Image 1 (tube, rainbow, N blue to C red):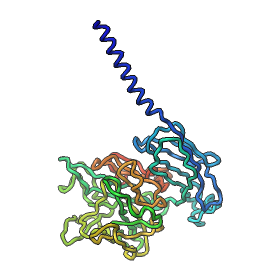
Image 2: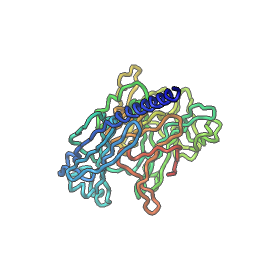
Image 3: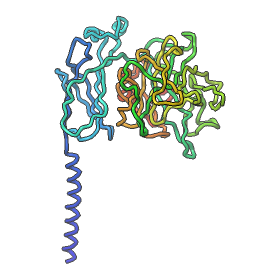
Image 4: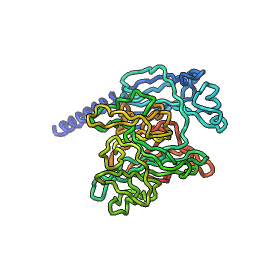
Length: 411
């Protein structure tokens, strides 16, 4: 009798376990198809876009699969699980070919120099629960940057007593050309809008593709050619230009930024920001909150643009939406932007994008805060020792998440 009961229990447990596995299998077995047809930009004289790389990214686990469009611009994905996804489309063509197609953003110098044209677009927050045909998608054209944002460290670090530390934020800007560029009058700014880390609304300016709305603007001083950036070299703009590992005010778990090119220093009536005399200061152009005592990149995800304009002080200033304290924003024409970087809190935060897709078609994200992770641009090529960085104008494709920041380095 005991053996019978034992056998019955084992069989019951087996059936229960099989039933649970079967439930999981049935849930995972709901597989669907995704179809889409990709076209060149609407102002081109050609239509269906061939050999476009299309990447389907699962927002929950970050896994992805890639396919290329066929002769008719069609691409399909089969056996896709139910869930949230992002679709990323990308291709590069020569300026000469783009000119034949009717491209308007290039000139003869671009053609002579063999400059490439980026063709890309991203579809965010695609919810898949059935077979879906997305119809037609049109690529958007842009030129790879000359000044590129190479690394953005915004997550911060943790001190020895487990406290949050964020004075080590920095942005690195790279010369991706074979010519000398100059940092003089180069501006760096953080972009207005929530990043999806809290119960908040997407930016009110999400529909404006012609402008970027800024909360903080800094500028490199100089008369025009005082501060060269050599080909394949970079400058670092630090929040605080100290050796954070060794400084008594720093954090042994952090990095050395004493060799930063510039630091951001806020001079205020009540002085809280530290001025490191060995590192020259950026020029403060604009701050939407005058009582701010430090330039801090949001640790859940910050958006940054770099630009040059004739007179940044002459840019339009507008009220910050839904604000009753008189805070303002600086309005920058998108055409003035040299490069943009977008980081949001999580993989499924696409609706919070703050930078227009004409500048940055996607976004990246880190896996937490104060965990030392940094966003570094991928290397595309190495030409006679000069590193060429990838630039498809899509932060989600161009940047990788690394476990610790690497100022001035690539590994």
